[in-house]
Length: 179
Figure 1 (cartoon, helix red, strand yellow):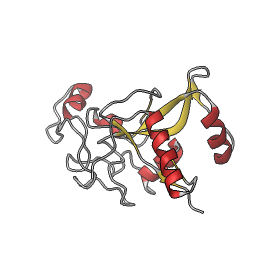
Figure 2 (cartoon, rainbow, N blue to C red):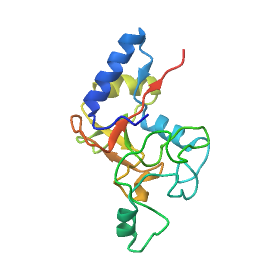
Figure 3 (tube, helix red, strand yellow):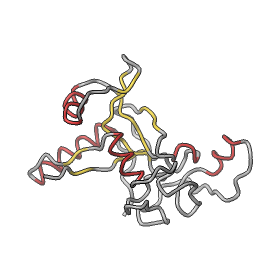
Figure 4 (cartoon, helix red, strand yellow):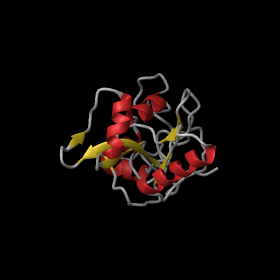
C-alpha cells in the first residue's frame, strides 16, 4: 500500500473524525511530536530511524539535495523523486515501523504558535491534547521526505506546516489510544 499524500492538516483531522465515527470510538488521532519521535527511535538513540547512517535501500530522500547541502558527492545515495509504497525498501526500524525517516513527511498534533514563536508546552499529555486542539497554531511535520536532503530525515528534524496546504510529499500516520 502507498502512503497517504497530498492532504492538509484539516483533511487529516476530518479523516480521523470519520474513522472515529465509523469505529464508534474516540481512540484515533494524530500523534504528538513526542509520540512520533518515540516511535521513530524505537528504543534507540540513533540519529535516524533505521540506525546511525541509513543506506539508499533504507531511506527515500533526495541524494541530489543532500549533495548540494553538503557540497560534496554522495554516490551511495539516490534520488527517486517520488514516494514509494510502504512495503518497499528496507525501511523498518527496530519496532517494525516503516519509513519513519524519509519517504513522506508526517503531520503531528504538536502546535507551533506564531504568536509565541515556540511550541506550546503544557504539563501533561492530556492537558496538551485538550489545549492544543483549541489553540490556533501551526502543525509540526516530522520525518523528512523523498524531495528533502538526508538531514531532514533525522528523528530530530522538525518543520512548521500550514493547516490547509497540500503537497505530494506530506502525509500522516494515525495512532490509536489503548483502553
